[in-house]
Image (cartoon, rainbow over all chains, first blue to last red; front, side):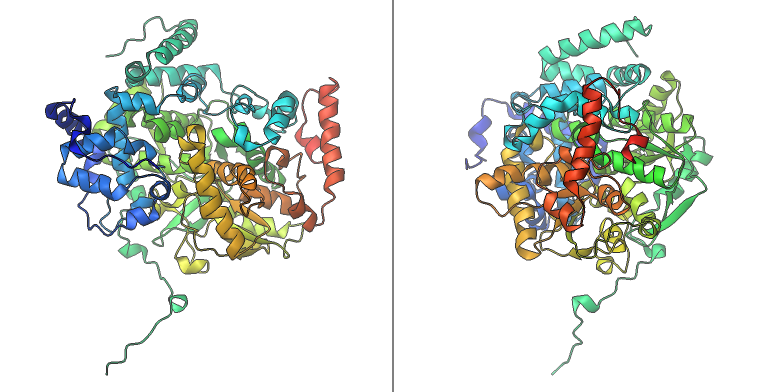
Length: 236
Length: 395
C-alpha cells in the first residue's frame, strides 16, 4: 500500500493563499456548523471506518486537520484522501457529534467545483455514470450489466447480458420492461430534471470538471429541451 | 471493600423516553413551517401502523396509498427486489402507485462523485415528493440511500431558510409546490409493519433456516433517530429492521461481531474501485458471518448491500475465501414465505451467489420452477407473448 504523503511540501506549487481560499469555501458551506465540534482523538471514527482498514486513510486525521485549520494538510487531504471515503457515515458514531464523512462530502464538492486536477483524476472512468444519472434520471441501467464492465462478477453477467431483453420483459411490473433505464421515466419528468440541473448550477460544475461530458450532456439536453419548448434555459 | 452491583449487558433494558429525546421531533418543525406558509406537509394516509423509533417516538407507516419511489440499483440490476415489494402489495389487495413520473434521488452519484450540490439534491427530492402528492399518494422509499438522503434533505430544508427559498423558487418554475412528507418511510419499515399479516399468510415453513442480517448504513446511521427500534429486538441497542420481520417468519437470526460494519459498497468504489468493495465485503462481512454463524442466507434491506454482498463473493471464491452465502432482501424472503415464485417474482436468476441449496432446504422444487419461468421466456422469445404479466407470475 502506498503511504499517504502528508508533508507540507507535497503541494508546494500551490500558493498558501489558494489553499486558504479553498478552505474558506469549505467553511462557508451551511453544513459546516453541524459537522465539526472538536476532536477527543478517541479514534472511534477510525475503528468504525471501512476505508481506514484498506487505505492509508483516517477520518480522525480529516477531523483534526480541519479543526486545527492546518491549511497545507487540508489541501493535501483534499487532493487525495477524501476520495477513499466510503460515505457510509459509520464515523457519525463520534462522541462529539462530528461527522468526518459529511466534512468530506463538503470537501469533495469544493474540490469538484474548483476543478482540482485530483478531482478530475478521481472521476476518471466515472463519466458514464454521471451521464446516466443526469441524462436519464436513473443511475444504473440493466444494459450496463456487460461482462467487460463487471468481469469480477462472474459468468452470470454473461447470462444476463445474453438474455437481457427477454428477462426484462419477463418482469411483471410494467415500469421495469426497460433496458436503458432502471424503470420507465416520463419525458416530462426528464425535462424537469434537466431544468433542475441548469437552475442549480450543476451544469457549470460539470463543465469545470469534465468538459467533454459537459458537451455531450448539453447536446442531449438541448434537443429535448427545445422539443419541450425551452429555447432559452438561462435563469436568473 | 465497596461492592458495586454488576449488571450484565444482556440484563440491561433500554427504555426509550420520547419526552427526553436528545434530538428534536422534526415533524413538529414541519407543521410549524406549514402554519407559517413556508411549505405544505403531505400527511400519512389514514390507514397506517405505528412503529417506535430510536428514542421512543412513534412513526406512522402507511399501509396503502403508497407511491413507490423506486431504486436505481434494485430496478436496474436486482429487479426481483422491487417486484417482490409490489407482489406483497398486490397479495394484500392494497392500493399502491408505481410511478413513471419519478427520477432517482441521485444521491448515489452525489456520495460517489460530489458532482451536485445541496440545492440540486433538495430540488430533485421535492420534485419527486410533489409528483407523489399530485396523484394523491404517499412516498414509500425503496432505497436505503434515498431514505437516508431524503431525511437529510428534509432536515436541511427545515433548518435552512435560504435553501428553502431557493428550492421553492425552483418548484414554482416547474409549476410545483414545496411539499415534504410527514414521515420519510423506507419500504422495509412497511414490511416490518406488515410482518404479522405476512406471517398469517405464510405458506413455506422457514423454521429450519438461520439468517444473518446486515442493516444498511444509510438506513440507521443518517438521522439515526428516525430508524425503527424495538425493546424486544436486540434490547433496542440496534435497529429492529429486517430482524423483526425474519423472526416473525420463524427464521432464526444469528448474531455476528461485525454487524455495524458497512457492506463495502462505497458508492464510487463499487463502480470504479471494486477491489475495495470486494475485499471489505468478503473479509469483514461474509467470512465473519460464515465463521461465527454459518447461516443459510444473508438478508438485508438496501440496494447497495444486496449487490455488494452478493456480487463480491464470486471473486472471493478464486481466493479460497469462506464464501457461498446467498443474499436476498427482506421483501424477497417475505414474498417467498407467502409462496411467491422464486424466478417469476423473486427473479433470483439476477443474483450471483448460488441460492439453490437455500431454496431446496425450504423444500422447493426449483428445477420445475425454473422450467416454468423458462417457458415464459421462451414464449416471449418466440414472439407469442410480449411480456410476462402478474397473472402469469402467479400461475
